[in-house]
Image (tube, rainbow, N blue to C red; front, side, top):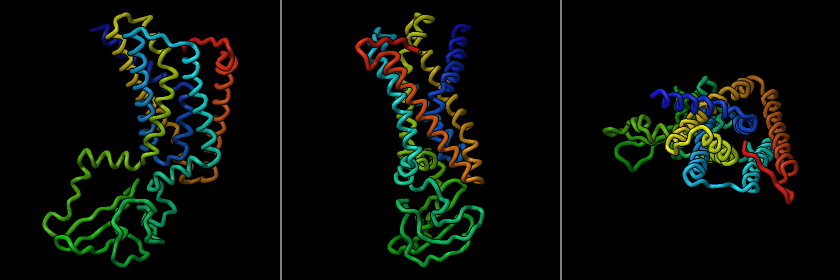
Length: 318
């Protein structure tokens, strides 16, 4: 029992520490630079941690169970992918392409400037919903006004039981629409309390691109570090079951550590995004420059110092 608790505690805290490696922090900083809420930034950290942990568990288990040997050139290539990923994230951030992709593939992420009022009670200058947002098109008259708590417009839609209306509701962090009738049971909102409704609010709000981006970046980082983690475990834990259990707990610790890290990183971006737009832009540009510079440094180290681009590569998993 003492050994079990020691393995769990060691794996968890080392996983949390692993989440704070410089390349990890720089990568997620470029991702959360455009986030305005700590909740969404924390979810990005969770997604990154899941991608990272799944890769480490799969590759590490293959090394532990089947004694897989990774050739130096393949190991260096996996680590090179981290540098290339940082360069790509930096370029996308600096050129504004990342913001454009986010706005294009996740149009509901930002409600400022979309024509809708936020819950503060500001007047609604336009009744046109954001492009691409899923909501029934109202057939009634829509006018600029200060909305009731949540409702922006409604319109009758004949052809269903009783009178059917579509409404768009503004909540603190997101907009959603629904259709309901005035017949029996026509006003139900209970689907939002179901697990499916919860997932829709969390991940639907992030958007597919915002969901996949940290997951993929986490997978790439996991490939680069999986061999080192697995070999380190084998030097301490000889039993394969215990070693894989350690990797699993290590992954959970990495997820928790990255969730806290991204939430902490997002604090200045969220604060300046609401009050100091120019400072927020400087922070976003700074994160892109750091990502680009650090990525180029990793590419140089792996490509030339460790010899990936030469005929004599040498690789030490770390």
